[in-house]
Image 1 (cartoon, rainbow, N blue to C red):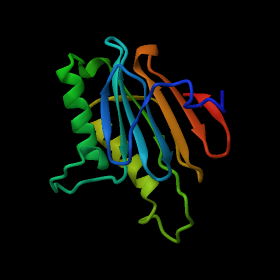
Image 2 (cartoon, one colour):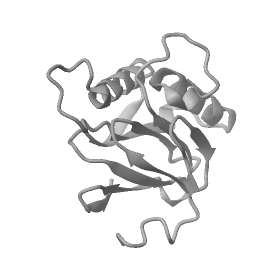
Image 3 (tube, rainbow, N blue to C red):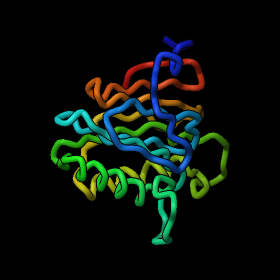
Length: 164
């Protein structure tokens, strides 16, 4: 499975600061301090994935809503609700948020700050996190398959590959 992590997939690859919503397979690679926020609606077999870089937009307008935790969550929910999803049937998954470098303080630990911001935003919207693979000091890649019950496969930079 490890060697064919992306080969057997027709996944849409989502770049840094981008997001997609639909029922097709989605993937993102090279998550370091960035976080993949996945929202899944099992009732509709629809979901979304955002590759989030930073914890907050601070209200600044952006042409890349997937870049910030606050704007990414709004964008994902808006598009999923337009497809008929309801918040009561949506669950969240988080992947990434690593601390790739050593810091003397926590203010520069973007990975940890990203994860905390997303958790807080999800809690504020009463969205439950049903799975999470965050933290550590290694990068990750993820494939999310909404039509397969939301199957989410994570490959870590240390070679470990598993379903979340």
